Structures are given as structure tokens and as C-alpha cells.
Image 1: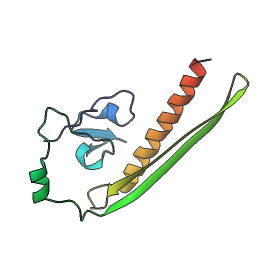
Image 2 (image 1 turned 45 degrees about the vertical axis):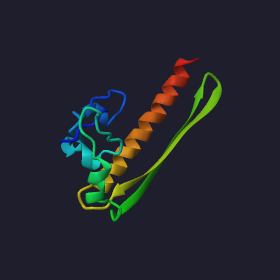
Image 3 (image 1 turned 120 degrees about the horizontal axis):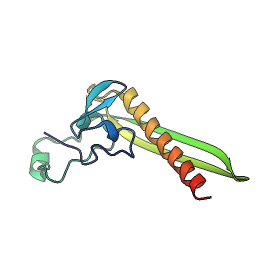
Image 4 (image 1 turned 30 degrees about the vertical axis):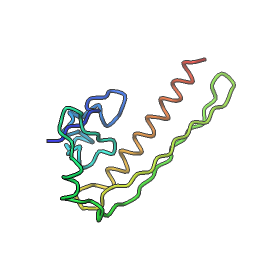
Length: 125
């Protein structure tokens, strides 16, 4: 069983509801290793070796490229700030992955990042 090393990260909107194997999103449970964009296997769980990769190559895997840009302009103490974030990722196009869910999760991740940048700027003044 694969387990993610970021499970339960309270600073990440997706990871905070994750137990490393499954995560909750909009009230539904999903397999992290199949849908999570930031999934990284724990070091204490055996990783796939090069020999195993040679047996089951993934070079023919079709993907869908999704991207998201988020931004915010905010006046803080008379000074205008612009916060922006952009991320792009390839999602497996196998039918196992909900591309729209991936897109929403990416959008949520970037919005959280922008919110945190703004809060940091406000708190630094």
C-alpha cells in the first residue's frame, strides 16, 4: 500500500484531510496515489525499483495538461501589492482520474497560496 509523506499537513488545503492513503474532498473519499498532484511516497515504504519500472513502463501513459493562474491585488497601508501564482501539471488520462477534480484542487491550492502571501504581507507591516 502506498502512503503519502504529506498526510495531514494543516498548511495544505488538500493534505489536511488526508491520511496518506485516502483523502476527503467535497465529502467524497479518493485514493491519494491516483488523484493527488503532490503525492510523494513515504521513505519508510518500499519504493518502486528501476527493475520494477522496466517490467511495467509508463512511457505510453496519456496525460492531460491542466494549468491554473490565481492572482490578487490588495492595498496594504497605502501601498498596492499584486500576488500571483501559476502552476501547470500533467494528469493521467486513464479514466481513473477525475480531471475536473484535479483542476479544482489545483485552483484551491493556488488560492490558498495567494491568501497566505497576502496574510504574510499584512502581518509584516
